[in-house]
Amino acid sequence: MLYEGYLKYMKAKYGERSQGTYFMAGEDLISKLPDSLITQILLYLPIKDIVRTSSLSSRWKSLWLLIPRLDLDSEEFQDYNAFVGFMNKFIDFSGEEKICLDKLKLSSRKTVNDLPCVTRWIDFVVRRKLKHLDVECLMNRKFLEEMPLSLYVCDTLVNLRLHRVLLGKFEAVSLPCLKTMRLEENVYANDVVLESLISSCPVLKDLIILRMFEDNVKVLRVHSLTLTSLNIDFNFGEGDDFVDGFDKKVSGVLIDAPRLKYLKFQDDLSGSKIITNSGSLAKVNVVYVFNENDCADVVDIPRRNMVRNFLTGISGVSDMKISQHFVEFLYYYKDFDPLPQFCNLSRLKAEISLYFLEILPTILESCPNLKSLVMVLEFYLQEEDEPIIFSSVLGFVTRVCRDKKIQRKAC
Image 1 (cartoon, rainbow, N blue to C red):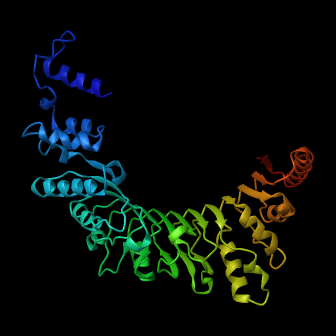
Image 2 (image 1 turned 90 degrees about the vertical axis):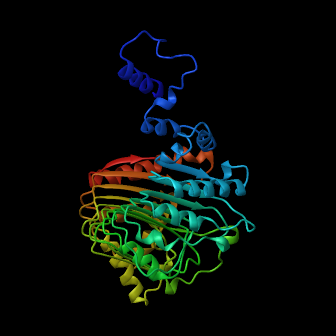
Image 3 (image 1 turned 135 degrees about the vertical axis):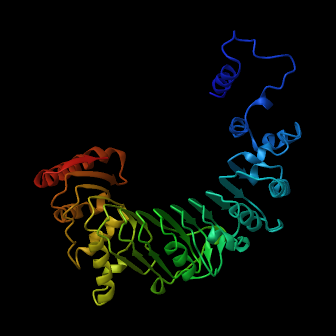
C-alpha cells in the first residue's frame, strides 16, 4: 500500500516512465516527499525508530513531531527511566516546535521507586488541542497519579479513557466536544467530582464506568441530556485492591438520561438503583443488579418499591439480555411481587441454569409480544446423563414457546 502510494506520487511528479528510471544513484527521494506523506509512513515504524529519524538531517530533526498519533507503553522501553526520558524529550522538542498530535495513548507501569510524571505529560498535551486521550496507569492504587486541572477544560477532546488515575477536585469543568468517555477503576475526590464530570459534557453519547472499592463514590449519579449508551460495572478487586466488606446501605446508582437507548448494568453491590426518564430505552443487558436478599424481606417496603420501579423503568425495551444471576433473582422475586409487563419486548436472550428453568413460563408471560427467544442453558451433569436431561429440557422449552408462538433457539 505504501509502495503503491509512493509510486503514484513519483508518476505524478515525473510522468510515466519505464520502471527503474526514477532513481538516481545516491539520491534521497524520501526526503523529497511532502511532510504529510512522510508522517503517514512514520506511523508504521516502532516509536524508537521514529525518534531516530530526527538525526538524519536538519529537516528531519522535528519532522517526527508532526505525526498525528502516539501509542506509548512503558513496557516497550528498556526500563521506566528510558520511558520517562523519551516523554521528556518529546515535551522539550514540542516546546520549540509546533506539534500536530491528535491522539495519544499512554500506558504506564511504574513501581514505588519511580517518580510521578504522568500528570505533567497530560497537562502538556491537552493544552495543545488533543482530540483523543487514552491514559492507562497499571499500578497500585496507593500510587495513582492525579489528573491535571487542564484536562477538565480541554475544549477539543472527543474521546477520553482514564484507567486507574486520581481525579481530584476542580473549580470548573467544560468538555464541549467530548462524545465518548471511559472511566475505569479510578479514584475520585468525592461523589460531586464524578457527577459534575458526567453532567458537564453537553454532547456526551457513550459512557462506560468501571468502579472499584473505595473509589470515594457513595452514590453514582448519571445526569445527561445527550447520553445514548451507558455501561456500569463494578470490579471486586484482587490483591492489594481487594476490600473485604462493603456497606451497601449507603451506596447507590441514580440514572437520569432521557435519551438513553442502551444500558448494560453489572452492579449488584450498590444498595439503591434508580432509573428515571427511561422512555427512550430500547435495549438492556442486565448482568448484576439485584440478588435474592433484595426481595426476601417482605417488611422492607421501600426496598421492594425500589426493585419494582427499576424493573418498570426498563420494561419498555424491545431487546433484552439477562444473565443467569438475574434470572435466579427473578426466580425468588416472583414469590413476592409480579413481574411488570414488557409489552414492547420482541427479542430476549436469557442465560438460565437448569435448576431455575421453571421460571421460564413466568418470564414469558410478562412478554406478550415476544418474537425471538435465545436461551443459554447452564448445567453441570455427568456426561451420560446429558442426552436425557437435554431432551427433557428441550421438550419443555418447545412446549412453552409453542404455546406463546415464539421463535426459539437453544444454545
